[in-house]
Length: 133
Image (cartoon, rainbow, N blue to C red; front, side, top):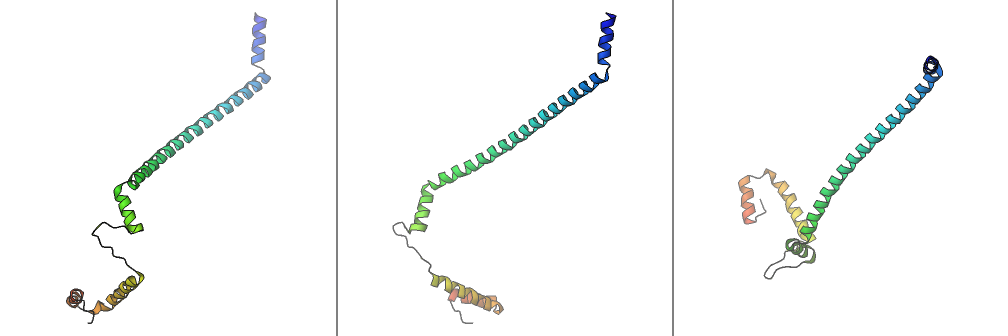
């Protein structure tokens, strides 16, 4: 037995065994490192995907609410009034043309000229449509 112990002791205490053991430990360490790195990457990807799912869910809810609004009578009525010119019985429709907007712009430019006029005189002109000063 003493011979077996000495052989066993010699093998484990040799430089070759130490180098082989060191190579195995380094290889296993690198494998563990890669595994840990991969797990962290997978966890990060999972959290990113969960956040993306949450964002898409919020966007989906907004779109569903928008669809519900588009299906309401209020939206249909307002859209038909604005785009198709529909009106309720007894209603009057006022249409602004380019001429009207040009006149409004001219009045706005005239108002700028009236900055030196007193406030009372401006009110008088406003109520009685007297543009002359």
